[in-house]
Image (cartoon, rainbow, N blue to C red; front, top):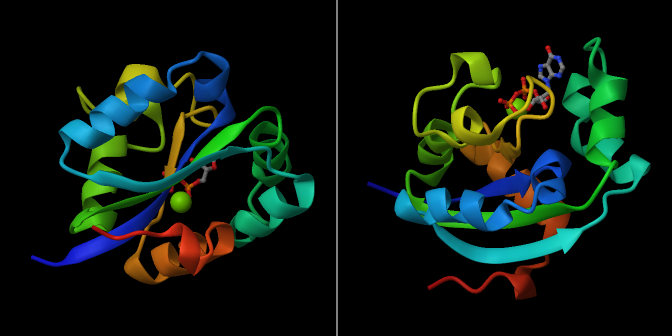
Length: 141
Ligand code: IDP
Ligand code: MG
């Protein structure tokens, strides 16, 4: 058992439908704790940088446009094995493949508008958290 932190983003398709509370409810029922959270507008520069790892994928430009199309909620989640646990709680990237009870199965509209982001490794979680949050915004409990 190891206490980890991971970065979550509630994406524009979810903020547009006013379901951030419902997403948070699934997160909290899983045992993960939301230790930091802010609702922001990503600029094109920030979204492009955040998803730079996908810059050669065919969906990159569309993904960046989608991520700036409305507000997002960036969050830090903390708990036992938070990185892997949140990937499970989110469900598969493609909602058609996501398991019952996962956020993406419940709420995602498409493989792109899939409601949430979650870090895919502990190393990336640390990088992504510091991309959005200053040390002073994180109050571990
Ligand atoms: P993940 O969010 O499950 O980690 P990634 O492969 O890292 O999935 O892709 C990042 C994001 O890019 C996805 O969450 C989704 O919004 C979008 N995306 C991934 N694959 C496709 C695709 O085939 N078409 C359109 N958008 C995609
Ligand atoms: Mg990913």
